[in-house]
Image (cartoon, rainbow, N blue to C red; front, side, top):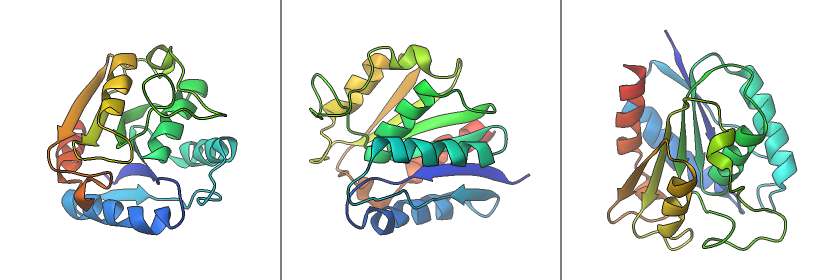
Length: 183
């Protein structure tokens, strides 16, 4: 059986190309029995939350049951918000937030976006959540991972020593958890 993953990139100029290193790392670590969907998100230079959510909804509709979702940086922030606001069309395997910034008190202050306080209650029931964050992340400080963990009591927090915002372009630890979910 071919396993599906959906990887949502971070935002900013060249983010899709940069995050390709993360996707390639994950693909190498997981081996051939998987399909990683890696769409180019609209206007990555100046991301529009609604446009990204619409693209995420299209991608979710194309997935099979028990797909695993991963979002890096801004992609993780928007992905988890999209899931909380839009029930997925089919059961999901897990959600991974990778170096995701938190928008709101204690995190980034954005004019047009704030992470909802009831985030965890609005995710699909029983959805496993894993938060991976580099302890040396200077873009989205490691404290952001703790802010998500507080709102997502079902989440497992994985802090990676010596890793930056790009997690050292090594998703080996993420792949280990994914293999555990796949059994």
